[in-house]
Image 1 (cartoon, rainbow, N blue to C red):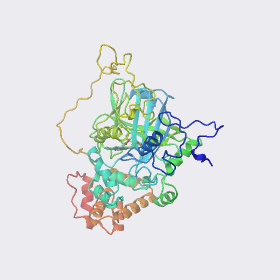
Image 2: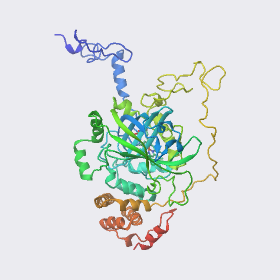
Image 3: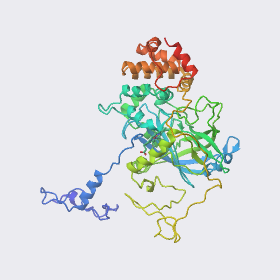
Image 4: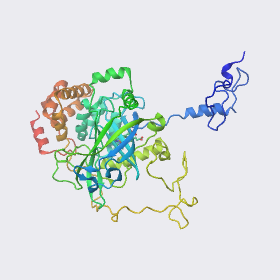
Length: 527
Ligand code: HEM
């Protein structure tokens, strides 16, 4: 009897024929070629070798952080105004100018610490990265859901991430390693009060805010600059989960947030966020008790009122997870005319890190992939070749000229958008210094006081639960910090750990720590 599995498709089957990557038809996809039915396999079987060796290379390295995520597509619609004024008074970025103007975009939400298949119920900040495909090329706004960050200088990023990632020996996320690092890094207090509150487990990706976190600049036609912060406000509202809710969801589904987003878009319930912007003059603002370039701080809304500038609607799901979610690549260096960097010490480090990791993770030609290519602007470079070069950029009328300058054709430089192309004058000694106004506790305390009672209870519970797994010196230093943040927080967490203020009164401020008068008053009250 003939074995049907070793036969080609049946007559009358109208489906497209399977081929290999060389375009050769595949006659048998079930059986390798062997010498006799039970004999050794042959090596000239190109189809089998191509299939297996491509499979062997199916994975690229996952992102070193934010490995688990979900991507969707949609559009941004501009309001054309900042408050009552034309937005052109502040930025010349084209996507913002005209009320009703739509710019296509991609967004990727993510968790930070877990691997590519980890649970989306983790207590963790959430990533909120938006790629606007503008007519001037791409703009990426790469933020999170908690408004602030753990550290204020990029040089500490590998350390904070190592402390939060699993132990290199036990491969367990260890509270003692996390709080060992945090207890020695007081600038983390504001972020910790957020991450360990119920906001640290958003119910899904649709019900959370997004924040650019770092300070950027807007530039208008006259070259005048303002400092700005970006915030995304969900029309769906903000919802969080308790640890009990999260445990129940996680028992059944590791990817509930990806599913929630996908299902909502599929059923036409398109999620929406409003983009609001805070602005201040582009100076160092000595009148403030914090530095506007410090990403561990928020800008008080009564002094710097957020103004809506547009809305984002998500209406399309990815067609393929690998091509569009795994390979999408965002970076803080990806700006368009009218938007600029500030000297925020995190931002400059981030800007190097993203494209550096993507050249390694996805490959040197990652910007040729459809999801990363600009859609509103044409790419013409003299960059050539490299692994996986997919096409040759349009080199103008003479394709022999892949260099510049040239008198025989090729590409020319663009003209500056304004006459004044000079940056600001900057003077200073080359140095390594903390910023002057660290003020690590005040905003953490304000955040604690703004919480509802149940949120404060949950925060105290979570801190106490985590710290009970830590060594005594780490617990004591954390209680000391919490007393500096707000008496009530320090007393309550301390009580749960059996550590009163007198037990931490002997602790000195950390080396190099700059204390405010209020910090000194609290220190004086200890014990
Ligand atoms: C992803 C570095 C701070 C938000 C990443 C990745 C790296 C990185 C290497 C992986 C990128 C990839 O493989 O495509 C850094 C460094 C930081 C920093 C060096 C500090 C100096 C921050 C901050 C935020 C943030 C403050 C939030 C405001 C994100 C997001 C992603 C990400 C949302 C995921 C992007 C995606 O979905 O593909 N970061 N990061 N990062 N980071 Fe950061």
